[in-house]
Image (cartoon, rainbow, N blue to C red):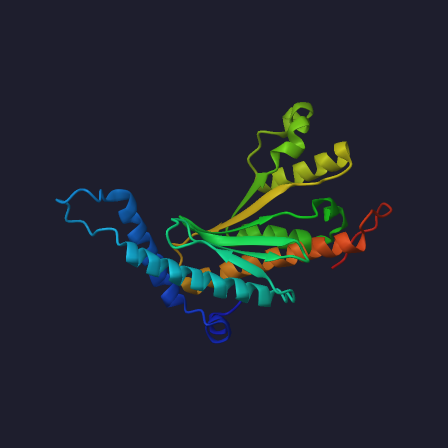
Length: 244
């Protein structure tokens, strides 16, 4: 895990400033939901649109530094394109695209901090070594791991394998869908989206390193699949596995 000293000195990320920004965001967002702007009798603090804009700008600035830190820690060499939400949107998000690697990652804040990644080159999971799986499972130790399956690609498999569905485990669903498509369809085109959620009740000193580490792992997982796709574009004989 990256140290706080490294975050502050190399990436200009101050955990105390991050904590305060989250507090400000939640307080101001709460006013959007609870205070009727037409109620002139309430003594509660009013929602402040200018304050919301200022907080949003601060959050996007943090997300920019967080993504840059994760990219650098993952030793990513490709320059990425980025997009971010405007200040009038309730959920602040920051997304990046690596065109050559076909990688998209989005980070943001909605109740908790989150990072999302759509699994690419899923058919090449068969070429992964244990390091891939260790990284994948590590995500579950950092935050709440969620897998949102690609329902269209497995719709017919639900009928023929009912006993395998209606299960709750996110890792289970991911690998169930992968192996079912491999066995019955001989190919896995799409699996779905991974989301990691981190509890913002934690202090920035532990939250920031964990957040960056989760994003870094997604960079690394994707790069392993991308390299496998380049190295084995058509397929390989049985028992030939990809090593990073």
